[in-house]
Image (tube, rainbow, N blue to C red; front, side, top):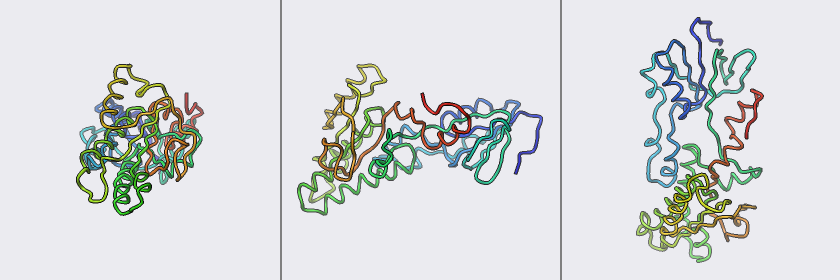
Length: 286
């Protein structure tokens, strides 16, 4: 189905994240017709995903319906669809079930985490960029303690309560701190056969300091707060291998791994954006 021709310029925005919504709001009440396309019908506040992953918030707390957010923008419509391709010359977007013409195109598809050539790690180490990621991490986190409660082998218990986070950027730092707080405080008295406060939380960062993109005083503050929570921080260390038996030679066994590498993850602009960018003839990373 082709969009009928119109004299008013048609702006198509792909992605209803921060960038896409901001663009749509700026174009509200202007003399343009705006179509916002997203494969979900909600806007996700990604900075708080780690709190969903650690059971501090429910998914509904960080997701808002896109239609409700843009309901006052009378020149804007929202379409639930997934973009399959972009024809730049014909100025057309193809989704799974329709075709849309545009005068101006804004791509705000965001980015996914990167495994730097080790995509086989994703099965063992899910990322944290979507609600589905957060819910899966929460399941693994809580089930690790449940598993430890049921078994009697002490070595297996310690392994079950060892949590490794790769990437000392904002999400990695927040996640490590949140897991430590859950283990030390939230779950501390909930089990009868294990002591959750004895869980090991290990944060690995390849750069010499945490939060490498931020000022050094913030890095030092984050390091101190994590250490005070009992987090083992290892800077200047890189993951070289990941199997069900462990991570490289640094951890005996891995029950949970969060893959997040801050700004570096943007370099291989993730599944959704990569799929679209290949039709535009522009670089996928810098």
